[in-house]
Length: 252
Length: 291
Image 1: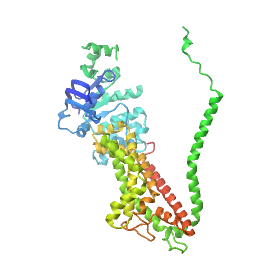
Image 2: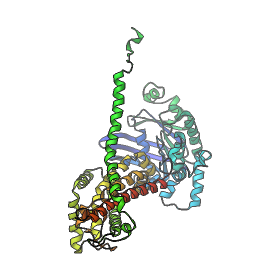
Image 3: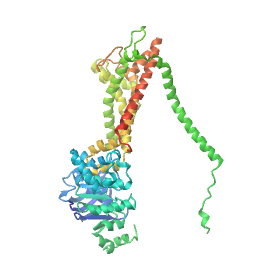
Image 4: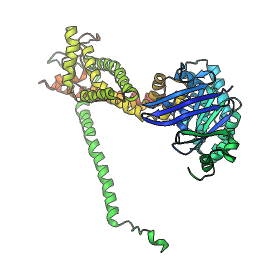
């Protein structure tokens, strides 16, 4: 089951440049929350703070508190432990190029020391099913490399890979930006189903997509969270002038 | 204003350009031939001079005393394999380890220092490396040995392997590492099971490059492995090596030994090419098609 996320006074830095300013936000469990905003507004940085991916960049630094369920992200939890509970799907599909489809999905389990082969078989099938990819690849699980799939399939493979470690939260950083409309449609459908089991935070450049998949939407601008509310409210009756300008296409 | 005023008139491709194009292609081909020519010439000449002296006795017997015809270089062939084995066993792990450090952890001043030292080490004359191994191993053991020869060659392998491993690991996109981090895989595990695995074929190329380079080295073995006219499989004893045997025989005044030196050179080059090809094929079978 998904868990909620609580963000309090979050500031993020790259060296001396501050890129996030005092973000406060509550993400509801088992819902999809979309983050929108122009390029460079900090929404990707924000999502990368939720699973401590931000700190893999040299000189990057975070202040403030994040709770994922009962887990305090920046206090007493190791990054690897946290990331097993917070899955991530990236902007560009990034399957492991030297691994078969099967090994890609099983990677999270195998590399974390899980050895029960029968169980892994089950998890791989369930994860690929969960990512709506099973029927397309079930005959070439071991024969084909993850990199030989089409872009849309690769992205669903990456979702399956993230699901295999059974996270509680799924972070998606513009998961459809490299995909065609048909693949995008499939992934959006998927997000709808995944909400039942996971809490989803999705960064997107596409406002229609935010409106379609998310119950809540946050609008970022210049590293600040300008508005956070029910999606419907943000798109039809925003309380901030800048949000209105952005969602109506007057800037950005 | 005319709508076409911005249109540029691109002239048809002139005769001069077509000729230049052909000429450049021709020059490029010519340089390829010029580069490959010495290699084939050397190999052909080795076969021409050496093949006549290669026979069963040459491959299975030890050298005969001066003046007696016959005999072979079996002990030197095995000696070379032993010394190169020791060199690879020592040099490959250190080289790959250093390469991993440089690529994954060494993006700082200490890493720059290691890179600089490694490049300098790569340029140190091989005989100097031999003296170092002499000081490190031979003086301590109080006698020459295959181990000392292996250490000398290992020192020569490390910088080449380290730098190519570093380059190959840096070619692996950051996104691949992040994918592994995102699954809760630790940094070290990611480096070994994801990054290094993705770069395997490039790393192997570096290892084979280093191997092929030291396989023919003579100078660092002169006062480490020293050479031996008899069978020896003890790595703590002086050991024959093909390159040493070739050197000794080539500067001798005997025609029979000259012929054997040519044959030895041919065997050495075939061994190196064979080893490189075998590793390549093994790696190709080990990795997935389409990867």
